[in-house]
Length: 131
View 1 (spheres, rainbow, N blue to C red):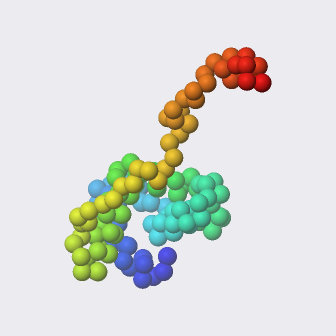
View 2: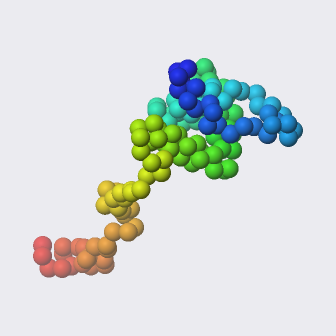
């Protein structure tokens, strides 16, 4: 993450409880490192355990991500970034329309219609007389 990206992202992050004086233990890692690790994971399509040694331990990164996800912070963070970007482009912060294409994904096998031949006798050429 570049310094310019971090400058844009930093004010959008939630303030930790310990920083507000409400108690709790200070976090052991910088949020910038953790966000860098999550971006690396998403961009590379790797598993949590395949995280390079340059980043904090994968379990620590996953705990950070899981905590944010459970509290709805990932969606909130995404929405705030999207709103900031849209306003910067001179548009409304919230989009007014969306498109969902349900036909772009093939249904799983169990949702497909069954074959016409369902019994062993119908599947066997000798039994059907078409040999």
